[in-house]
Length: 178
Image (cartoon, rainbow, N blue to C red; front, side, top):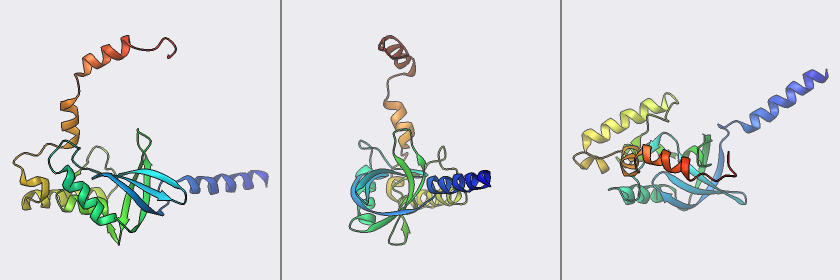
């Protein structure tokens, strides 16, 4: 009997911690096209939109992506469906505002890329890929440019070489860190 109760308790705790449990909040700030600060109760969460990547600050169309995210979310209660926690501690999520999935709208309008490396959930990711293709063909948003560079390629091209970074990290390490 005790084992049965323990299993039930464990399952209840597990369901409370699952990433797919949606919650509502209000947008405090749009950081950029794919990152927002959303307040739930008294806590503010940094949210990264799942499955997409919007242009970075110094890239063309970054302001357009940010403005579209503001237009879609400002002054509205949004629904956040967490998919996980990213490497920078941000909540990776689907965000719905006024019945519209913000992630989807940005790709549809040509203001964000479908992010194949991290978009694994089907059928959503197939849909985002198809919407990106339609936006490209229609030359919407960033697809007006002759050869737009995806943020993940753009960031990589602006970093110092990997070899020099490895050397620097190895030789600048604190003696107190292992």
